Image (cartoon, rainbow, N blue to C red; front, top):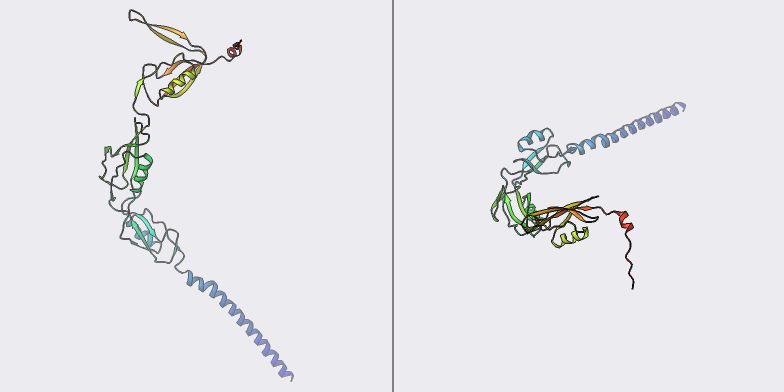
Amino acid sequence: MEEIEEKKKTTKKQFLIHLGLAAVVMIFLVYAVFNIYFPFVTNHGESLSVPNLEGILVDDLDEFLEDRDLRYEVEKDSGYSAKYPAMAVLKQFPMPNAKVKENRKIYVTLNAKKPPVVKMPSLKGRSLKNAQLELRSLGLSLGEIRYKPDFALNTILDQYHEGKIIEPGKEIAKGSQVDFEVGDGLGNQNFQMLNLKNLNLDEAIFVLRGYGLKVGDLYYEKEGSYNKETEGEDGETTYTKLKVSGGKVFKQNPKAGFSARIGQSIDLWVVEVDSAALENTPSLEITE
């Protein structure tokens, strides 16, 4: 009986050992399947990140993509951008940084060898902002803006390409620059500048505004004088130097008699007002 009991204990012990070994093997197999086999199968060839091909010449694509285990195919339709040379990549699919399998084909759109042409629109009489939007929609760019005396502020007076006036309907390459001549809003009405000397500053400003002129820089000095011209009966002109009191204009730019234009800024020199003198000035009393 004892021998039989001993055999049973041995058999049970061996069974537990085998069961433990089987469990260890099973755990290892499960670990290997989920952490080694599955990642290898599912991620194999899918960990590649698509590079940015924009601006790369088509002649350089083979070597560039071959080093990255990728291929490319050129789309039939081309595009155009003045930013890149001819036959450079403009667009691609899949987009940069997309995750793809090895040997994946990247579809690319190339920059045309010759820029397509568009017909120049008629932009005369339109606002500068509106003309800019029209150029952009046609693939053209804004060049130089030259202002010309005209009352129509920022209105297109003429359109130029390569230094010459370009007529509406003429073909022009996409990406070309178009220059504009626009109105400055001031017009071309010239007149002789008025004499503002010895006027109070507020009077001088009132006169300037009445003639469509602007007040430019104001310069204040402690003292000021000007030469008054007097023409005698014999036709000779004499000059008398007169001192100007505080708060009055004694110099201006442009000078009186010089040409001025509507909207022009006029600089004035004014004698400073003596604050002490103002304080000592008696007030005017009104009696009945």
